[in-house]
Image (cartoon, one colour):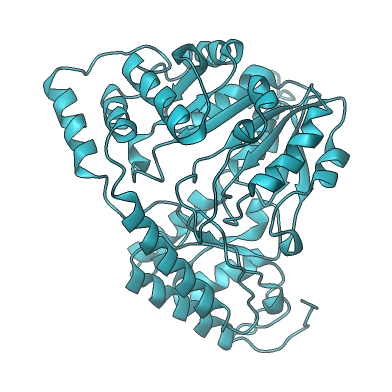
Length: 411
């Protein structure tokens, strides 16, 4: 190989490792070194997978369902996905319009790799889930960020969408409820965005509905193809079993969309992982078809945790914590900490400095907001036990109280 030719593909220069996984790894390393650390970085429910789902997996093993399956999902799981979309979202998909992947991330990856190339733009509201822009970059497309804020509830306004669309726009990615902010779009807000999209028929919508069942305070959940049926033929509705069914490790995500797109996604998957785990697919089929009666109890617990976290963090000097509509994250504003000094005299210049200070000083591991495209904030997951969560929030408050005035910046 010529000395001046790099070994690694140039597209990797635009891709970075997942910051959420990096913080989780740092927390684990500190724990291994003997430090008392509470991990608030991972978006993983602490509830166990319901027994009827586990039993379905065990039964599948005993039946010998341990072989290859169809590349993008078993017929039984695809039928269960179609039934779910009809029952819960009023969307009518055929099995040929459904793709099942190894987690929602693979479904997203397949869709963008199948459609995005050099010069194509993908609109991504910020704050965003960390993988969106990196997958666009891997596809050699161009992420176009629409930066939101607290004044809009971390939600993109129709005029902002209109301004971001160009002739090169291929997709809009919507995530509601949002990771990291927990913001959720109302039916009226989706209606307003849909009105913009109807004027631009070349723009497709990838709606990430992974937190659909984790919503609070009588919020009415809707997805955009449900709100505007005219967008159905250019929408990929993405979902999965990880969050609502406590099945993160089972790795099953799915999407419903136009048959031509689903076919191309399957072709890509056939050359990467091939089929998702046969056992996980049997479990996911039971999850979608079986009882949903465990969800209200889980949701009530998440709501109590959300309210506790918001209350405690809003008493911490330098923090302002909005109350989210959904998911299991809060996204506190830490502008009041920027410019302050730690007990050992270090100035906090960025939200990444804040995150490092919180874990190093008090053992509370959060993820800095710049990882999600909006500073100065940090993301805290409240998907851990209540008492441990309370302890972590008190630690964050204590860490804030130990800071002293430095070169203070305006909040």
